[in-house]
Image (cartoon, rainbow, N blue to C red):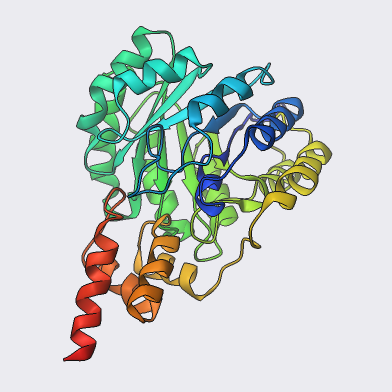
Length: 337
């Protein structure tokens, strides 16, 4: 029997950017992208952690302009699709055109799970200029399977090549994933992908649950490098999928070497489930909030757990990083009363 194919989408150079404070150099980007390409990864995503044009005071400044990184990476990526993330309201159609001009072949347009309609023009434009376009629903734990299907159909109708469901807070357990992926599989005709964070230590299990329910694209990062406690670890997932009889097209020894010899040496800290990242998953808070929360806690002499619980209580979503300081300030005022 022919093995079922799973496409591996590596986001080390995008989600991993959060974990290194957006400090990737040209040399690092080309080494990682070239290594991933040689071992058979299908899509290689490279952007600021918050997508193209994300470099800012609010989200963190990039050490090297991402268009320069894209241009350099495009020279070493020969087989995979070089991919960018775009969050409408941060990145624009002009930024998307610039990304294509610098070598991007695919774009994943990411919105909050209930706001797919703000991505319509970006997906249509990407298709009109010959790019692969993906509808990416963030914070998917915050919507029911029925709502997710409704939103996914908006992406389908405007020409998306596949739908990517993201557990941006690392809040879901496998049954949550199964309910959402199976609802999509039973309702839309285009492929489905899944993006997980490891804040509850469940990213590999959740990714396998997604695959078992029909997902054919899975997001990963080498050594799990990413926001919060990181993402599904590329080399681990490839090993597990191989054991389960799936075909990832990725050379297992090769991806282990990329993770150990190229990515691990540039990591600023081990990617672990510590107390703060565990709280992200427990409270259902966007994973890229972690470093911002640490800084705010230090500034206002607070326990970061208190900030994260309050962010979760308020239902904060990606793009509201600037509100973390406001929340921390309010909590500090309450402490002094």
